[in-house]
Length: 354
Image (cartoon, rainbow, N blue to C red):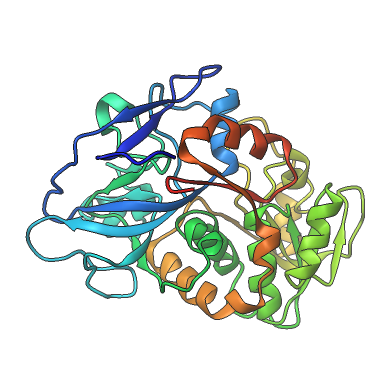
């Protein structure tokens, strides 16, 4: 990308349109805000669904919500604190959370900031309402007050740092919903996209015997590198699981959850976030099976804190090269999205300085 004097954002005009670069006057962050210069944004599957029309999205708008970068400016007043309690300073390398919460509404007070009544989500807002530096597909992101941030070390691979604020923290939330004591349990993880691969590594690291389920042989192979004991296609019939985590978004995987969960087990549904997956479980299946069913959508700040700590400790053992494919310049965002849609790469990246 050629050098620019100020920030630039890639504006998505709607389904079928090409992104256009928009120059932006450098903003002055308000108290509690931070201006972050993007190092790397990774392309999440939800953005692919948006640009293809499978998922409603703001148009025009700036997409992207898996971002790592450096703080270049802070608003006046007390510095924001990251999710591990550290004051954020100019020059810090930070993973940006997917949302900003008000901290004062009933849901925030109940410990559900990810469902804040005034929730703002990066990469999910209309340009006219949120401004151009509101998504990760830009040279900078204006981080609002109430956004979970994780300060990360300079040597943490960007391929692991960028997804912290979406995939990794959500994987932590899904695994945590399955209960604390997983050592010795049989776990089934449906979907070997990034969420499923990370959940597999987390569960295996806690002593669970993980079976990963995915139709793609390459991703099944990556799941084995992440610690799975078995990796099978959707037609396979693994033994009933003590913990069944659905991260694929495939309706069939959600429908079969109860049948594939052992007596006394736990079902965690986190991948099915779109309509079209009605469930036909009977109440007696849950009652007689002594099953627990949990839904997970996004995450709380504590999950991002755990995600950062886990990633830093596990980074040397993770097959980073298998998790991130090509990294495109920001100007080539449409090419990056097209490659992400057709390639077998778990993630494709976009970098302003690529």
